[in-house]
Amino acid sequence: MEKGITLTRFIIEQHRRNPDLEFTELLAELTVAGKIIAREVNKAGLAVTMGLTGRTNVHGEEVQKLDEFANATIIKTTDHTGHLAGMASEEMEDIYHIPDKHPRGDYILVFDPVDGSSNIDVNVNIGTIFSIYRRKSSGSHAILEDFLRPGREQVCAGYIIYGSSTMLVYTSGQGVHGFTLDPTIGEFLLSQENITIPRRSRYYSANEGNYPRWAPEVQQYMDYLKEEDKASGRPYSARYIGSLVADFHRNLLKGGIFLYPGDAKAPQGKLRLIYEASPLAFIVEQAGGRASTGWQPILDLQPEKLHQRVPLIIGSAEDVETAERFITS
Image (cartoon, rainbow, N blue to C red; front, top):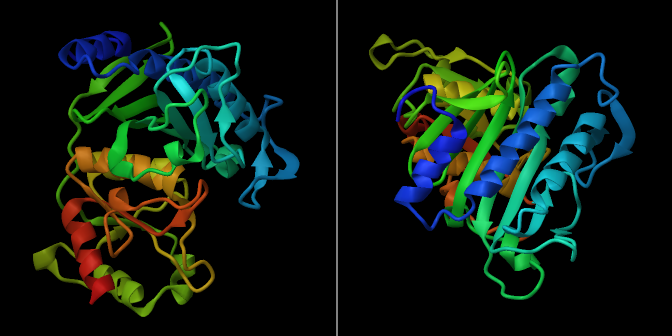
């Protein structure tokens, strides 16, 4: 489509080609939430939504005021649409059921309200990650089994990144598309259509402070990336921000591999399967990339609980395949 068209028009055109995409209005409401959150992020240092709340979330992490604000904003902008039967958030311990005063629909929404929120006070890019599934149950309320689903059952996934510009990147299984918010008109405009991640890169993103706790095979892969071999494009260069959405977004556009493996301290990994790994895995596969635990594709994992953690290796397909060979050798 023509670069610069509005997200609304793009969604309408996609819906015309595929009438099964009944959640398009829900996607539009999510962009409203993104605009509201972006407004608060742009006032960092001035807004009362910055700083710690003084409590911890279900993961034992300190909760930022922005986390609570974003969580409430997403719920408020989507629970009345009539498309949802329930929601789950990284910031909430249990399922959020749609109130009886609102109509309910055939979809469920899962989201990480603000990924990387601890970086807000140093002006590092942060983002919102979301995913939509068609519900399986038929009762009046969504149930836990509606949320414990392999990532391949997603019908839509995306993220909104707040940085020098605010961007929405999403897929509904028909390629990956990027939209940039034009603040002068308050609209997301098409900036990248059918994004394709390079098959191989020369960049890696990893928290190397964890190196001593990694398994020997992971250490060997990292050492391999740093070895000089001009024929294969090594050594690779490190590009690590420490904000998952920011690291992933750069790699999606430029090529690269992001690794957050399990370690001696957290064998199960750090990142959340439902709210972070699965949505980004759906996006990267639609863009021609790959996402893995090191042993199996992220999208094939069957979640056992809402806040399950998982190792994540994601990015350019050939780079991830090489990492898998080291880890499974």
